[in-house]
Image (cartoon, rainbow over all chains, first blue to last red; front, side):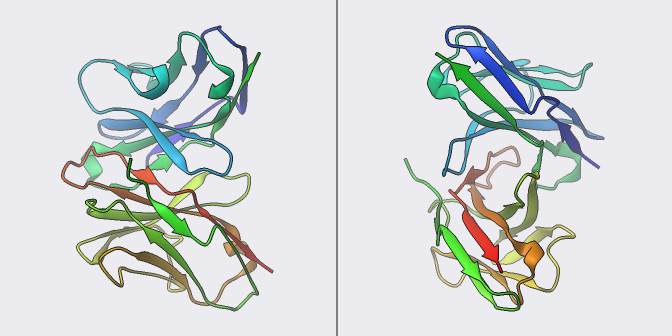
Amino acid sequence: AQSVAQPEDQVNVAEGNPLTVKCTYSVSGNPYLFWYVQYPNRGLQFLLKYITGDNLVKGSYGFEAEFNKSQTSFHLKKPSALVSDSALYFCAVRDEGTGRRALTFGSGTRLQVQP
Amino acid sequence: EPEVTQTPSHQVTQMGQEVILRCVPISNHLYFYWYRQILGQKVEFLVSFYNNEISEKSEIFDDQFSVERPDGSNFTLKIRSTKLEDSAMYFCASSRGNDFADEQYFGPGTRLTVT
């Protein structure tokens, strides 16, 4: 079975500082990994994905994520946080080998960027 | 930019009543999904739909649930006899479907409250 863990319920960071939101995963085959962001009263918005290739993936709004196979991690990063980045962030995984398209989500991490 | 839309944004119903949640996926997408998020819990996969039939479903998606694409644009989730534990935010999503690695695009959700 596939699973995702987001160990931090909330991350606080000052505007202009770098941010990291952590995600670890478990799949039996090769992972397809995704990050989504949810703003209040909005749906989940796709940020970026890792499928194969370069371990550093760049996405929307200046976010990037680093895939680390040995640590089974896919942490979300941004070099300089903005107050407008404050939102709920979800990591999700699919197992390439299963052929299933269903995403398995983590519990979410609330990012709070202070001015 | 095309978006997934969902109606209504909030539905209140009495236990035992039938509800239909509506979604309009992105127009050229081929795969459609329903997920739900009970308050304070993870986003959970319910069902996926392709080529006018269910392609995957989770153990949550029992006989009380059904999905339909009644015309070329709408995708619906029906709950036949609602229970208190069906109270949740229901998200519709769609993906292009040409590539297994395609990301899913989510609607803003329908908050279902069963009283």
